Image (cartoon, rainbow, N blue to C red; front, side, top):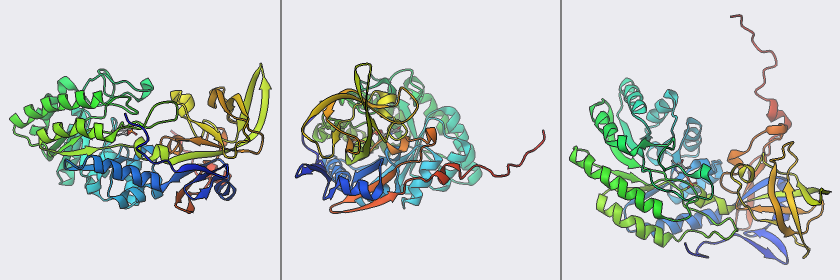
Amino acid sequence: MGEGVLTDAYARRDGALYCEGVPAEEIAREAGTPAFVYSASVIRDRYLKLTGALGGVPHRVHYSLKANSNRAVLKLLRQMGAGVDVVSGGELFRALRAGFSGRDIIFGGVGKTERELREALQADVKLINVESEAELRLLSHIATELGVTAPVGFRINPEVAVANAHAFIATGSKGHKFGIPFGDAIGAVRTALKLPNIRILGLDMHVGSQLSTFDPYRAGLARMAELASEMVAMGTTLKFVDIGGGLPVSYGEGASDPDLDNYATLITPAIKALGAELLVEPGRFFTAASGVLLTRVLYRKQSGGKTYVIVDTGMTELLRPSHYSAYHLIEAVKPNGARLVADVVGPVCETGDFLALDREMDDVAPGDLVVIHTTGAYGYVMSSNYNARPKAAEVVVDGDRYAVVTARESYEDLVRLEQDNPTWRTA
Ligand SMILES: *Cc1c(COP(=O)(O)O)cnc(C)c1O
């Protein structure tokens, strides 16, 4: 894992934090707080670095939309040449709305509904990664009904050891809910060969997120190669080998950004040997470091010998600290030079509503603008309206220009779907 290979769009000028060419203060004044801000250049830069590193083999990058699915970010990646990886009908809808066409889209997910499978076939997606024999049978049935052929990849569980920052983001070890258990994979292929309107195109794995080493890719690819040779012996040809996402990012706690050359060196020979096109599905890697969450300090409080910094954002906008014990670097936009140790907490009525515990950080006072770093992935997309909190605004910065790309929700938005006069039926 290398250091300093990727650009950082957030730097200080005259002591104040900028995103690319725009002062954070100005964005907060215009968009209000809390607001997510994403740097376009970080996303573009990472896309170019990854496709550059993988240049030795035929490949396509399918951005995992679940990390950050706003239309501006999707359009930016589409313009770079990326495809997408979607895991629900809603994500498929978002992808199509952002201008992706079926051939740009991989559809995955452990619990696809009949409706979602139908929508994927109707959108003529490039690949549907199936996770069980039951799903395969349902897909064959729907494809036959629609008179189309379903493009199938087998998401297998390679059952490899995965070391992640948190157990909730490991997905490719024995006993996880994801994928077809390794020992059942050939049986599923045999079933697929007998089913009508199924075209076998590939193998897929996604071993986990925020991988701290690349060993799971190596081990997973070796297991995929075992299956591939059996599949070829059974008369199938593999067009795609999809190795999922999982590229880690540095959250500023000592972990570093991935060394893409190492990643490519490890993967390339295996892909060449398989003679297939490589598909990769990174999410976090593209957007996490592009984003910050801007928030204002509301209060400072002492309680039980502890200092609390109470800000206007919390678990409703950024769930990662309480859900994954995740670390996010927190800084004052204009530091005064002093430091403090505090719990940084939000306004939500939950003890789990924190952004940092016992954190040594810039001294801040009510009214100060604070930035929570590396929040461009699994931030806004995991946000909720708990405590009837309207969702935050999203802003994209590109050079010295910026735009609010998702407006802040209003109170009216919170109740829009409630029925004024519900229709009561009698059973
Ligand atoms: C979540 C997910 C990804 C993206 O993971 P990152 O860690 O954000 O790169 C890719 N593929 C699948 C199938 C996923 O579920």
